[in-house]
Length: 227
Image (cartoon, rainbow, N blue to C red; front, side, top):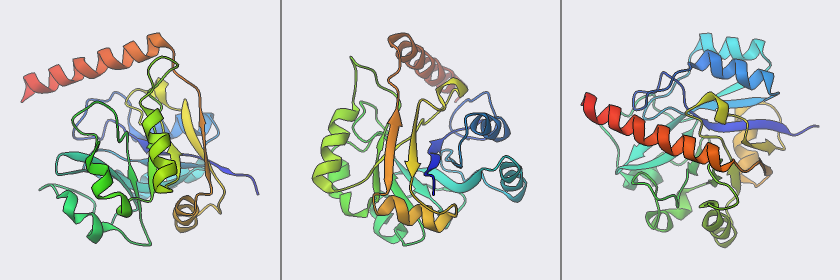
């Protein structure tokens, strides 16, 4: 059985926290062109998942898994197959033990990147509640904050999961995962937890890194002005 090509950390224009130009349907179209089997749209504090989207993805031979990049105590945590659809009032990082179950997948996204939403040292206090740790697409041969992630993955015996964390459509496909699993949500969740996953990644060019940094600070400025 061939391994499933998957990206379990993406964003679309439905995201309430970011300004993104492409919607969920455009992302699904892009995923189909690139031969993806599995996709999770993990917008901030919101699950972008409904029957219409699921059927649209199915027509493209893509399995859509519900997900969210939740903000817990001001830090980002990826939750696949969550039991809630919105995070309107915010939740505490102390809720992780309550949120963890056999039916969901909890991932530490960009854990050691130099940004305020990354877990950093807080990760170690809650490491037992994470099922995987993210290998981010945002790196090149000169700047690579994934190095510590790889080291911690080995120390904690946690699977690495490659994602694009795309906020721009051109980012999608640069880093992804191959999962050795049947093509259904629960099998995929169990496969990741059991480490039946490998990272496929191409380093970004220096120009692409600058482009991401420029767009990131431009976005933050726009959102600050609009508040």
